[in-house]
Every structure is written in structure tokens, then in C-alpha cells.
Length: 126
Image 1: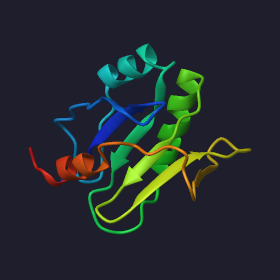
Image 2: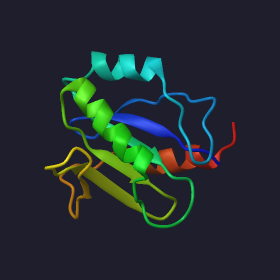
Image 3: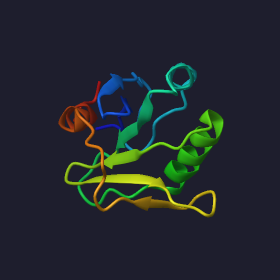
Image 4: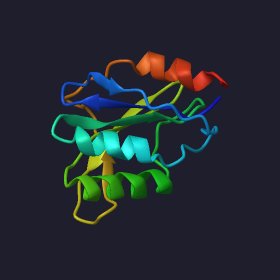
């Protein structure tokens, strides 16, 4: 099992499946290629979903929250941040006022496609 991610647009449609050959069960490496993609597509960018490859609540780690904040500051844009476990999906967004104040949305307006495919990719070991 490994963490996986996908990038989606403002309508929740997948626009990029970053390949992370060095992904681990609890870690996705930084990627210059992914950053370039996010910058080039920031006008249509809705967010980035990633997995926590286990069962249980979808809750962001401190690394997740600081990464969300850094990416948003770099892009100059707020995004949605779905976290997908094998049994839960949580969608997070910045609520402020502090830099790391992200909350789970109780009823997100956006449905991200390919969540099941994201889970399946997270179950693989390649």
C-alpha cells in the first residue's frame, strides 16, 4: 500500500494522475513536475486529493496541513483538499483566520470523480 494523489479541476474532474514511484504508505515525496502542473493549471485547479492507505477517519496530518498552506500561498489561490482512506472521505478547506486553520466540510459542494480509482491505486505496491 502507498499514498497516491490526483489533481482535479473546478468541476471535480481528474486532470492529472501524478506518478510517485517513491511513494510510501505514509508519505508522498515533493515533486517539481507536480508543482509545474499546478502552476500551469492554477486557473482551472479545484484541488488535490490524496490517500491515507488504511481504514478509518480521513484526518489531515500536520505535514498535510502545512503542505496545503504552502501550496495555496505559492499559487495565490485557495483549494479543496480531499483525504481518502479505505473507509472514509474528508474534504478540507481553509477557514482561517490562522494560516493552518483547515476544517472538514460537512457537505462539500463538489464531488471529486475517481475516488474509488484513487483507493485502488493506493492498494497497489508498484
